[in-house]
Amino acid sequence: MKEHFRLKETIVTIQADSLSYIELAKEVIRFHRRELESYISSDPFFRSTLEPYDSKGDFPEIIKRMIMAGNTMGIGPMSAVAGTISSLTVEAMADAGAEFAIVDNGGDIAIINDRPVVIGIYAGNSPLKDLGFEIEPRDSITGICTSSGSVGPSISFGMADAAVVFSDDVSLADAAATALGNATDIGREAVERSFDVVKDVDSIKGAIVIQNEYMGFWGDVPEIRKADVSYDLITKG
Image 1 (cartoon, rainbow, N blue to C red):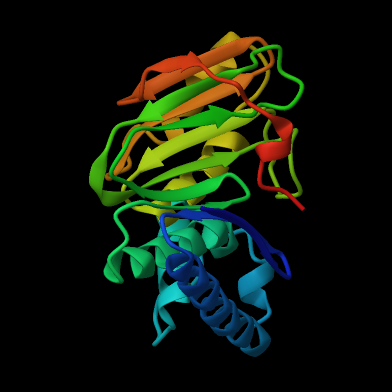
Image 2 (spheres, one colour; image 1 turned 120 degrees about the vertical axis):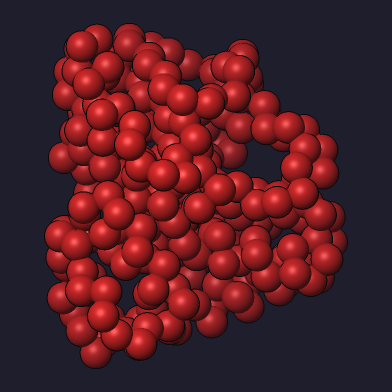
């Protein structure tokens, strides 16, 4: 089962084997959005800063995870908001018994899957199209997060058409994808250099960068294969 769900800026596609898990997912998203909005109302700087945020304090879980991920990558906490919401939601679904659950929050994906899943890569106007990778079955949650300087509304200071990071820490994967995208300039050598920002970060398994006709890989990355990437299936507003 699949449902597209929007709550203000949070736009997700939720997949599970039961409607009950999808309804649970929506409640979890509502709860953590309230926590996030309440904290931002008390400190608007949290939302606007592009720099690491002071980690001292008693924070709601969503805020704590966002701070930790952003600080690890040397950037602001909002870099991890989508992946953190995805992660918290899939964790709740798994705790309720789901063995198959996917939350795609604008390209920042948390997944637990008891069957193979093919995930496509959307890289905007890059000539590298209809590519994807297969996620083998696993009984723990992992993150696949994407940032782009040419696709979507998120802030990016780089030229990547797609910067993808794989990590079991979904919040970290989201912040790291932002940092990787920021580090990507134009050309083959620039793509190769971009991986320097993730190479020494614990818990990051691998990464992919697409910039125009160039595609680079680092670390443990699923095998790339042809995939039918439909624009209509992309989670977007």
